[in-house]
Image (tube, rainbow, N blue to C red; front, side, top):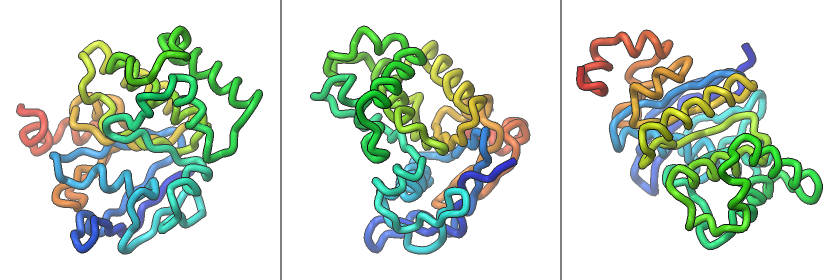
Length: 238
């Protein structure tokens, strides 16, 4: 399989505080890789650093054969890497349509091409079609998560980073969201999924990395981690 994203001995943090300590991972085309770990393990910091929102202190970040470490976020987005942040990161005072258009801003997608991308988003997420002129802040939690994901997809990313997408969603919406992620994987996207919902993440993922205190402490096929006594006891309460 084709490797889309490689993280090599990545160290990152906030000012003098180092949060990530030599993280290495890779994601193939058409694969979901889950990032698991308790709050504070470093999952969000890892995704923000990959996306260019935080600067790496050491290490490399490769999108295919291009080293993106230290690039600004808008240049990384233009290369085909999209982040759906924890909390969704929508512009609540802007309309649903305006939020969708922002997803293609870094790639300079405009006019007829953007109109096509919006139509495709509405086909994938029909609930958004009737709400294009509504303020994003007026949507339900589930609709806001759909919008955040749809906005990322308007830029036609090759790698999609998802930070806690199931947070705050009702169980039926969580199942629908994981199903959407599976469909995106099947379309060829490389997906990194950071999740507190460990069981749901392992069911949809192909492989997973477990983080603790900013280090990878376990990794392997998702099924193997689901069957691991340590993972079950620590994260699933079994």
